[in-house]
Image (cartoon, rainbow, N blue to C red; front, top):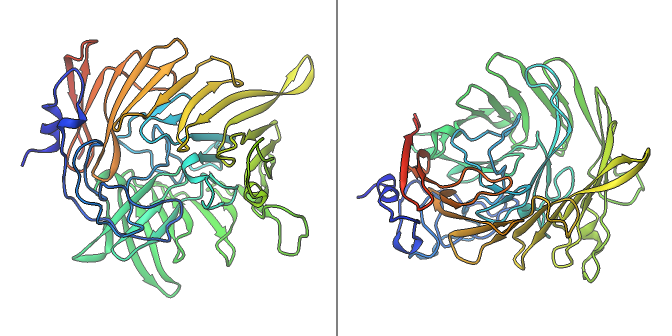
Length: 450
């Protein structure tokens, strides 16, 4: 059987033609878990398999809840205290940024940069539009937003699933010979061990760099252990709600919520976080966009403002079709010595809720504008503010989205262009071929995957 690497290497130039590919690489079957939040019904491509849009695939026999590729996550694998960086991650973002493969609008907001020292405290938020539509979990900071410590573990019949704080999802299948050990298709994701205790089954996720994340029987993250022995402790109440985070230096974040006896109306999520540098306050409840027919209780869980010791930001939700999707950010600045709100970003979506527009500044501006076109399966065309185009070809390989080829002028926030990527059967990036403007190979490099 021809390997995936060989098959991709033999693809015709100047472009990879999806209609010529039929990639059916049966690896390890992923488990179903209908209760896992934020993930919908399966795509026609079964989990942990490979297929290119537009080509024949196996019949969609997966039961409801079976996991396909996860739509969320950092577009360039930035990582964090509880989110793996993805050793072989490629930049799949455009603009500020929108995922060029699936249209997810991702946003990373730093309220408090990491404090000095190993695993120093931070207040960093991740937003994924794919998880902010009606019916998605509201998390601690409102629909679509998660703190960088909100990585959670979910147990299924044959696998464990980790949903990272940045929105990425990893599947770890149980070893039939040792069910207490779970490993992913990609060794770079590490492994998870399950241990029976008096408190129930507990779990330790070991990263390849030596970091260990411990989860309690409810799947809540309770400790982050650095290779040098330093650790972060996370405390939750009896419902699993995060109360505090303490770093190796003894500094703490304390999260405050509206209590059940508090008669204040509104979302009961995090109201403010007390930190060593001051208080950070969070406000919720967006106004309904003009023309929107929406239940106001849905909008009550949208994060609209963050007040920090050094300033503030507001978040806009202005699309009448999708009133919970982030469409812009404004920042409190000083103009002529007076405080004023300045729009620093604008984002737009198509009829399916895919991100198709990113602009620096207000709507109508062309500053760093990128527009995404998803009309052809397996192909995304990005047009910049000068009308120049970049074509991205992509596929589902080993159950995950993978970038195959990039051709064109390049664009703001995008990775390198005029390149073709090679993968092994586990979907790991194993090599890169540089192309000239005609799509002809001019150089090639191989990576060591271990």
